[in-house]
Length: 202
Image 1 (cartoon, rainbow, N blue to C red):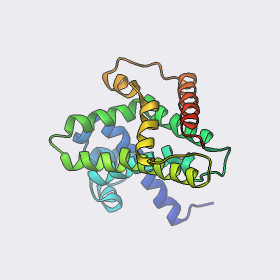
Image 2 (image 1 turned 90 degrees about the vertical axis):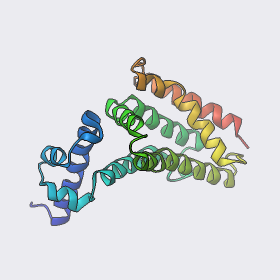
Image 3 (image 1 turned 135 degrees about the horizontal axis):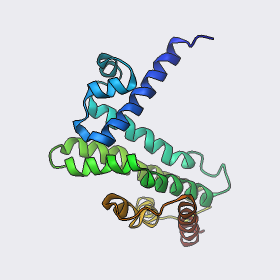
């Protein structure tokens, strides 16, 4: 069965984003729209028509990643309680840290922050700040439901993120730590969630 026009457009958008992720991880902001278009097997004009600029491509990539990270927090109280949701959030954060392309992209933005402060701000606001805000909103919801007792949700969100990330992100950025396999990630995620829930239990 032939795909409808909307399905074709969506598949092109996904192909462009994946191509941009690969190109940016390999070449940084020096990656050209031409290279991204070639990898995605579309025209350069198609990339511009869909996303407008390289900066917008970066923003959408980060936004999609944040959606993946916070997916476990979307339905407060609908699962097995805050501990499971927080452990799920922690796993995806750690899996992101363990992914070479994610670390490569973060290195690029750190290196280019002085020359491209606006892009660095977009990276931070769309990424870490949005992720923490969604985590804080989840904690507020769990507090209203009586499953947690959190007075300052923004601060508590920072505490939890710090417990999860620890020194692992720095180690990966420096290339001196690689032991973040599935078992290690699961242990860290469960321990952080368990301790957090005990600390902020009702």
